[in-house]
Length: 288
Image (tube, rainbow, N blue to C red; front, side, top):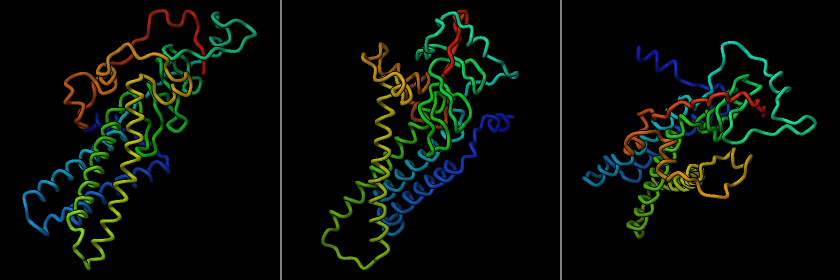
């Protein structure tokens, strides 16, 4: 059935830190949404079309951020399939004709297929092994405790949307709080709870928003430069701009189809599987 198929694709890591951080993210999002509607927008306390619109817009950002986070947390980031039977690559690595004897082994290039001796599989270019997940991930950027999962080729869209909608939620909340303070600058209030909650929401929107903005900027640059965090550390900053257009690079991470679909976290990005080149093992494979 469809439900069974979906559950079979669900990824859940039993990392205690990742589980705690993931729960904390949802608590902060829920606190921000309810707090903004109750204490800043004051929906239900003062009736107006603008307060209704403000509450709906904040709730929209909240729902989209939560859906994006859940999809990023539970979706396959691009795990390289494991072989049914374990293969010993030691002979291939020792008898590699492309590697002169007595010299240091050359690490595979960024666009070369390679061998993972931990998973014992041949893996596509730009795949890396995650020690927390215990699997190789296609175009792995990093293992993120925020989502308790790796950020890879197949769940990058969801992670990126989580950053976008969380950033919009924080920015909108920040503007509402600052606007309220400016409008009510000379108005005294005896409601201590309202004051404390507003200040708490103000600092949450700043801290959470800046953190999300910093990560989102880094992710955007990694896509436009066509080199993620791991590749930056291993191969350095690219000396030339990618030959592909910016939209083509975004399409490679967010999937094919209409660009409007990129903004919907409910839809799976259409990303084709890598096709291994013919005779790719004839010259030998290097292990990393």
